[in-house]
Length: 337
Ligand code: AMP
Ligand code: MG
Image 1 (cartoon, rainbow, N blue to C red):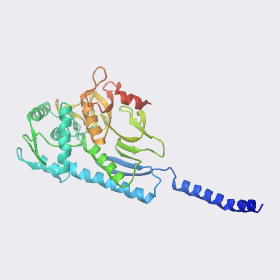
Image 2: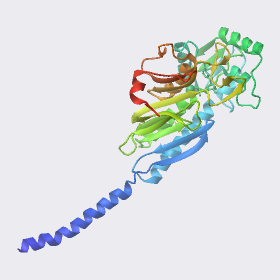
Image 3: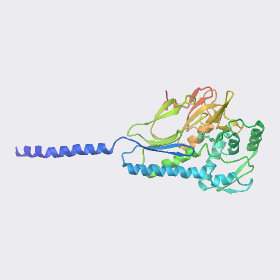
Image 4: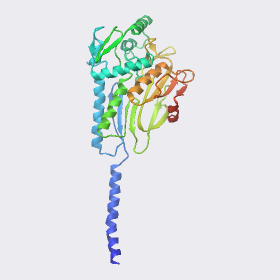
């Protein structure tokens, strides 16, 4: 009897303590993501973190990842005072030192150029300048100027000696526009991980790498419709470590007559690529996904909807008629809207 009274008295405080702990746990774990945005690399970048850690720690990690993207932008931009700009202004035939990080990414870009039959071309800077999509002058350049450049690019060579590079013709100008964003995303994820973050998305204008999950659920990712503004083509539920990058002809373009001229160029013809409206690639990192989304955009799919690409990539191609073709892996992930 005495014992029973004792246990009844001691149970109440334990129960209250238990309730208080439950309350505390739920107060820490609000299931709310922390997100920050910044305009970097010519696009809106957002970093989203889903951790139940203290806000201040997460915000510091996000800040560090944004700084890393800024650092990458400074290294690879063609408009800033860096080794890329120095190379593009250097004398033809003279060895020029590139920043070691730039040199490593250029070597990778050159390999992808060869694998994609020059569809991906990291040295079409002068052709891009000729088309001037960034400027106000929305017009097709003279045919003769395009052909002179195409012939020069075709014949020109680029050589590497360690971190030194030299070009045989001034028509070759470095442009990392189709790969640097992916690389910056990979670097940002690396920094987040170093800061102990395991659940996050880095999104640079729709190009993303995600890690972990969103409080026990997959991240839901929408793919932009190439022809209907603010609509999505479909969506995917993704978790783990997934890089997904889209190249589209709707990003920077002008229309003359019934023709759309856009910023993804085919260095072999000198004109904007005509086979696709958009291409989404999933690869093991965002650098590869970025480069191959551009390459596959230019290459397009064949009549069976197949592409020439490394087998470890998944793709969704919307061709110029708006017809979708997908790799088997993509078919399993993609849900039509
Ligand atoms: P993305 O949006 O990743 O497909 O990259 C497009 C940007 O990459 C353009 O704005 C150019 O700076 C550059 N670019 C255009 N065409 C190509 C190409 N065929 N290969 C490599 N870079 C390209
Ligand atoms: Mg790209």
